Amino acid sequence: MEPTRDSHATLVDLLDRILDKGLVIYADIIVSVAGIPLIGVNLRAALAGMETMLKYGVMQEWDERIRAWEREKRGEKAMSMVSGDGDGPVDATAFAG
Figure (cartoon, rainbow, N blue to C red):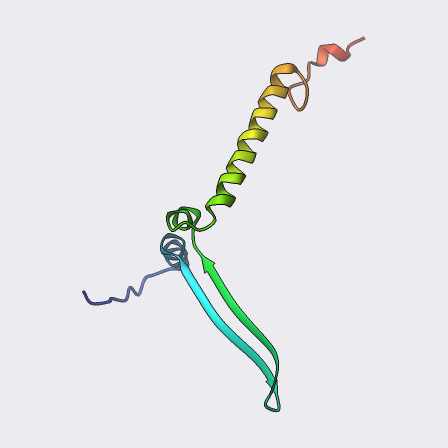
């Protein structure tokens, strides 16, 4: 299999590929003056779509916690609409005097 170059690739194609496959960056940066290192930064970053990250086991606990929180909030909102509290529709005739 030979690598090929698509001359019509766009930014959208690049982002789609990165989110689908993922991108990992490892960088060691050292800022020095007159040969004396002043600042050292070790960078470890991963960029991928949530489906890709979950497939590889990254951030599963965070995803489960966020989904549980969202289900809880939706349940509370549904209950408040049923009981008449909260952000449900307002009956205009209730204010007519």
